[in-house]
Image (cartoon, rainbow, N blue to C red; front, top):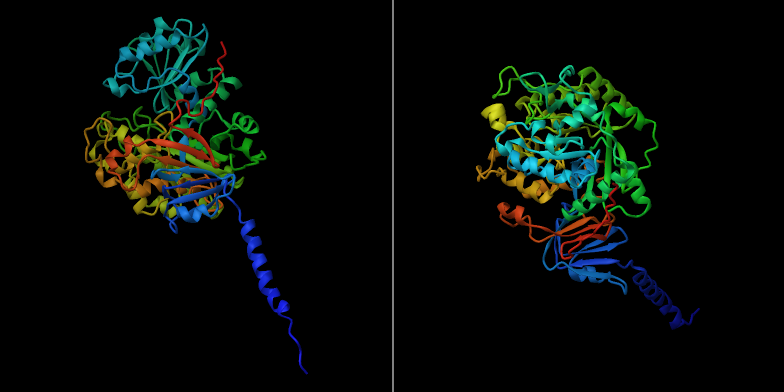
Length: 567
């Protein structure tokens, strides 16, 4: 039997395949934005550096060569020529005080006041702008810039008769209050001393205006809460500031809590910063009973506690005396039993925990509590953190990695404190001070932040500090404790993918990969190839969050906001 084969029938499968291929090509997703001619450090070890990137919506669509990305170009695709500049994933600042810092941008600036006269004049000038009764807050002064003498209320009293003043030392663990503020808070010669705190007094027993440690609570509990308008203004100012520095996400450890304010801005589609917010550890039950409703813009669930204070204010807790003050080891500002109870309870409620610890005694204390927690509550993916972890006892260095504890550190502090730290704790203890390399060598997860407004938020300055360790006074050109220098790539990881890990976000951001958020920064120099000493001179050209440009250095007003002032 013979069959006559129809040639059209034979061609049918081939035509069908062509039609399917044509259809697939037409349905290939086109990019909304394509960046070309760049040096893109992706943070992804499987595709570390590429030339171009395509973005669809708020996510990365693809990465590769200019030619490969051009295949994704559609009629409405916006093209951006990076002109050979360097691109990194958006920087994540793992330690900021968001509303406090935003409010400081709107208040008197004392951070670089170099003399008592300049300190006084700035406050006097700022007071002239205020109505009677308005408070002057923040400030962030540094008494080491004028030789170390602590300010006193008499410097500013005659200029601030009608305005309470409470300005903080840059580390936030010491404040100066004027007479108007002290009177408002009821602090005088008869006020009793506070455990784990100090009311600094003159020879007659009268308060000088300086309050340290827990003594600050006597004043802080009396300061009127910021109004909603003030919080909104602070957040707006902070977002502009972060965008200009290439920061696209922050971990907000401010007790003022930015969540409600940020939520209102999110509903208006006016957020340009992703926020992971913390609440005080002792208020864990408030968060445990809350529907967190986290998304890619706003997250909650982190709790922050304290073990001690800071080095500069002599409130950091050490195993041995301060070198410059006998019989002074600093002190723990939180009762260990209470601290442990809060941590164990919060952990059972599946909340995330981080604790401030600076001195070696404080660090050992929190590591011991964490170790007990893991033993008694069982192993799970906690991602416990220690904030600052500045002065680690050598025997505790490996405990971070052994227990899986994240070291959340601030590299700029190293080149700032390096000017004077050895005078306070001596040549031996500084060997494991800001010990970034030792921590990384021990396989610890290290994440970087700024502690803004204590220090500038600039990740470029942070990277410069971590890689060069050149102190701000120029006296350590080869680096302060140079054996603790790290590489640029290690610093970039600490500001991007590892910082994303610390907030349980490594699957959605921190590296530039298809499907992850299109948060990225364009910088006018290749961080991986430039002389590290010159990193501090580089600048952010553009910042993108979710594929949208939120900062452009070529514009005189990169992304202005209207700050409403209530008189």
